[in-house]
Image (tube, rainbow, N blue to C red; front, side):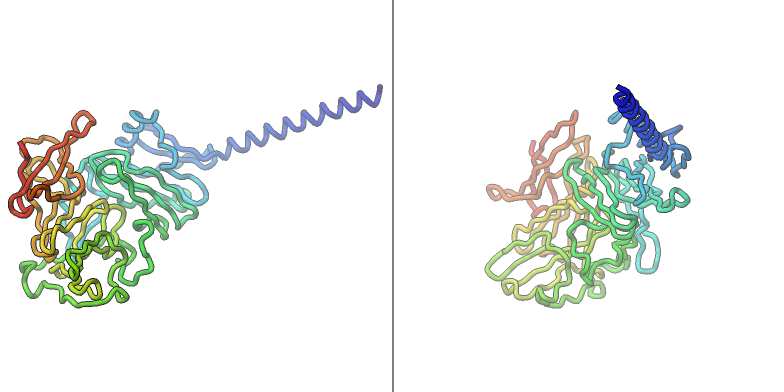
Length: 384
């Protein structure tokens, strides 16, 4: 009987000790829990539940939107506070101070008017020294909030993020290898010698006062074979005839939403290729969600929703009538439409009429309209 009492007492003591240890573990974990909070339009974070550190800049627009959609909290997977990275996103309204500077070959800044057509700017802000210093990086502009779908760093240098495109539906994945300072489209051939250096912001644009068609500004086109390729991805290719092939190739990516493209043509069935774009750089800048089509060896289109404006200022459709040597902004007569016009896919021929399908958003629903052109896509009118 005495032995039984000792046994039960021992069991009880072990149970008490186990409870004490469990409570200590819970307390310790709660004390070291990483967290964040919003106060007076500011963001603060902690890694130990005791010391709170302020993240620079106002988060007023982000906070207001999160209160409307997610009880005032970041969605899961859109921020990170751990040993690998401290990183958040912020969205601002009609504030273009975070936009990257674009300079010409002499270092003069070029104002990027197309980007300033959009209401919201999204950027990342991160720290690798527990909040002592901060870096921010521009990710793009849009008419919608919630551009960031997810972001994750496996260490302080290597990360991946997913962004919504400007149609607010499709998505694009990007990766970084230098801590978030520069991002490139995932699955891009990053070892290509001809890529842009570090995919940086400072895109050199030609600012010569001479016409882009002048002899001085023309790229000296040189035939070369695929084994000597000067690109790192083919976006589009069409066989016009047995011998003629036209394709759109990547010349490099610029952080998040932009890339550079070239147009190439083969007249020997793909054995050799010649660059077509006749400007000093040999490429043009577009947004990643652009779509392409060539209807024949001369007429082609780039549907770049990243350039879409409103009313009569729609600049989302670029047209070439000389096989990709030059591109112009198609003129779209849409003065009757009060909302932003989104061109769906690319122009097409139907019953010998050149058309495209577009929509505007009304009460969160798409309302479709059809447009036609009688001059190879230079000017467009809406079907009444």
